[in-house]
Image (cartoon, rainbow, N blue to C red):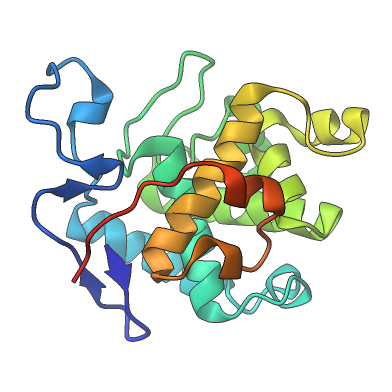
Length: 200
């Protein structure tokens, strides 16, 4: 999927956001489903990202509107594979996988698609403003800001480190930009294997 400056989206048949569609995967495996968002979900994500693109944290990170759009979309894909009713074992819910306390603090109904997206965007922006670093903001979104503060950087949790690298790979794919050219990526992210899609 490639996002154009005009909001258009291109996909290639047979590919999912996680690589080539696996026709042999069992139906119970979440990865067997293509993470192709419904048009209304994609439009809601686009509108949310556009509404927040002028945020000071976005400007301070040097992200242009397209960079911010790709980052936010990548976060949503990594969190829920664009499934509005996704629920984690820990209780996170929705497109942005908001925890109940986080949704309460943000004053959003996490079951409502638009509010979940708005809360997710505001929470990510708060982490960008607090940590002034994309990797640290993503770590805070995934593991909690207290963990980033506790460890003085990205926590040593494999899940969190893999999450950061995954978001960067998704960003690179969505913006059709080599990973090493993505704003906010680190050498560690660039060494991790990335899914390569043959998009035309």
